[in-house]
Length: 293
Image: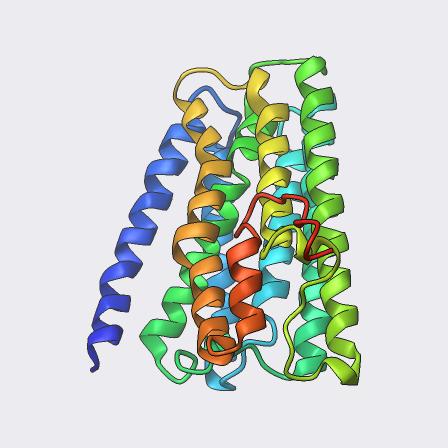
């Protein structure tokens, strides 16, 4: 067993422990089903679904259904929360916001991997049972944690009608979703052009930010948290860490650091690439300098 495999096996119980702690906090004063907190039931479903799909994925050494499973997990939790929870206009709005985002991103990523055939993130880990299992377990936590503030608001017994927070949250969410969609589409079109083979994109939103799609995703979850805020009180407010978790994961752990390292290995000696990196912010968009326009 390699050192990375051992680290993966050590990380799995930590991931599950974080999920258990979140399940306890988000369940306080929430709806119960047959004596069990609905919020915690949803958390268990998130981990279970990913574990179930992991098994055939490992046997066939494929990551083809990884992102699709993530989106289906969101949709499943939305259905459970709306079907078994107290309901209400805020719960419906939050469910719709997350469902629209999950359907759009899940279909986009699934079509991309179907077209490309593989995802380079998994090349080294999918033959390793422990490391591949950790990735799927982490996805279960990712879904549960990012969705946690919306889920807590959808399963709470504390009624909260739509208000200015809902309007503000919806506006922030819509802005983030628009940025994410436009950035992804611009990159897809860039890559589909044979003339751009081996090149990096510096046009459109990618002239304003090196990772505009991640900026849009952070805004999406910030908008969800703003919308959920009035329905939360006490321990469930811990779930408002959701957009912070998304920010930290994308900017410090798995998103930008991995992509930036891969880009430096590929284009680090290219003066144009170095100039783009120096002139373009990593995350928060900024109009490009006049000289670059």
